[in-house]
Length: 272
Image 1 (cartoon, rainbow, N blue to C red):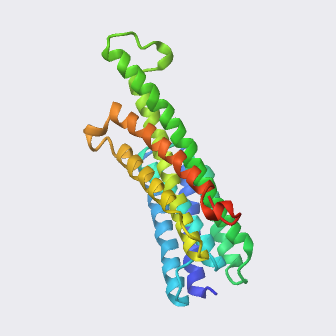
Image 2 (image 1 turned 45 degrees about the vertical axis):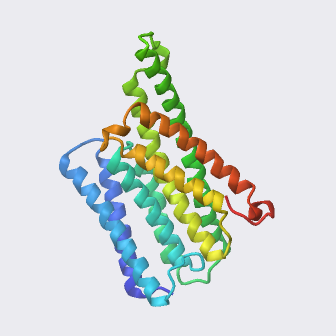
Image 3 (image 1 turned 90 degrees about the vertical axis):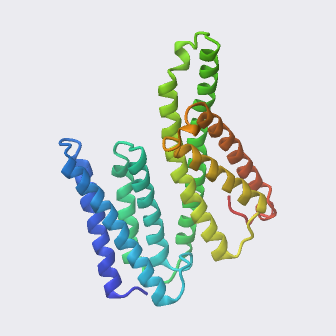
């Protein structure tokens, strides 16, 4: 059960997230550097306050696993979503992303304050499982877009090297690369959340993790991490990044298939 101090810190994080969301919305009419920095600061301080609550509460109850505790589980989900927003907006900003995600973060934190003193209920476990599935499959969809644009990039690049007209229908290499990197950024963030929620759920509930699924998921994560940071290392830009995005998507499909045919999934008790 959370203490009054933990609840006060939780309320402070809600205030930070609310202020950041309002500032972000106000930027629709007036865009300034001060407002942009203020919005980011509120987001980061909100995350720090929420993480502080998690650490404080986990130390007090002697257990960091969020599956069996309403307070921790809801805050964990809120922090992961907030980190998702911070990561995407810090790498390749998507306009108005926080307008839709931050209200969910705030509602989760308010839910933690309201239900944190009550006995754990299965709906929290279901929410955790849903978060794992939505982010995992959402990442797969984003990677499908990245793979498609990456494949088109490879075709267009090959035609240009052969001095053949690429055709306007293929789009410019610059536009294809931008679409690939945007999709990879979104997919990478979603996949990271999916992996974290999946690992914690399996540890908390004692479910075995299929080695093949783990290896494939790790491979996907590493490949897209390389693609995502391609601007830092020019060696992996352009055609190589496009090829890696296709390979990563194929591994992602392999991981999904491995999850379906794992012993736990076949027996009806596994999670994707």
